[in-house]
Length: 333
Image (cartoon, rainbow, N blue to C red; front, side, top):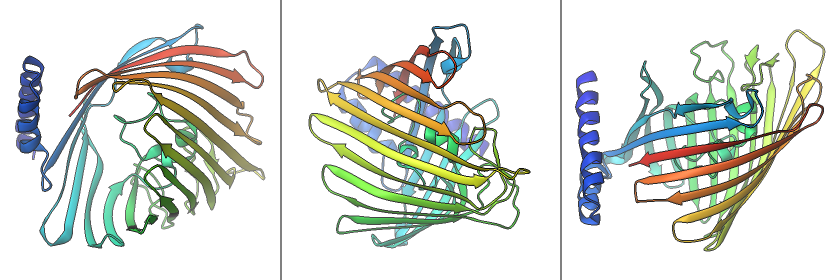
């Protein structure tokens, strides 16, 4: 496995260097034909980011340069209606973040078994290469695990779709208390609009809730709704998500509320301008409520290379307001 992975990475690196030296779309098409087949589709993501807080604090990641998590992704559809995906996070210690096998009976019913993103919030769905802003809206990290292990059922028909899952409910952790996370999504999609509802119940006890540091006693509910518009000139998304649970070892019931609204404008065929309002609040835990305003600019420099710039201004309920900027330089094949 390691040898195959090494050869694949080297091949892709040489491919990317060749593409940089020759911008011919014909050459790019040749590489797409080689690495982008239905049976074997290779995806590579490299990101270099910078974060600056205008104050001397850790807001927006402080002041530092970072390497986004390098991703190498293999997926495809096989004969007899089977499908697979293996996505690797190539840090100093490589790890698997997606690993599943699926079977398609029809477009109305598909089954996926393994580790993948749960369908609990729309903002989590896109690849990190295709998010509106450099960082996802905060409601994702506050309430949802990035990956879950279990079974997912999917179906699409006449514009309607459903996503149902049953998972361990412990994220990347292999710990298990024999209780499951149940998820459900129903929605309707047209050429321009996509809207739907999410609802989940995580029965896992003593579960840490996202990145908040809070711990759920069990039976944590997560529910929300979203609407997305993608037109020729304007695009945008609005989403609401809320989670209720008993704080572990207390008699208190916490409620986390998050929502965001993003509006974008296709200024040119290569440039997008965006603005987002991002709200996050807590009922009883003492974590400070806040609202963020983000301004964004995305430019697709070539078919494989893009840049993103975000300006961030956060209004806190009690403490002083904070501000910063972020940048992302990206290669995506």
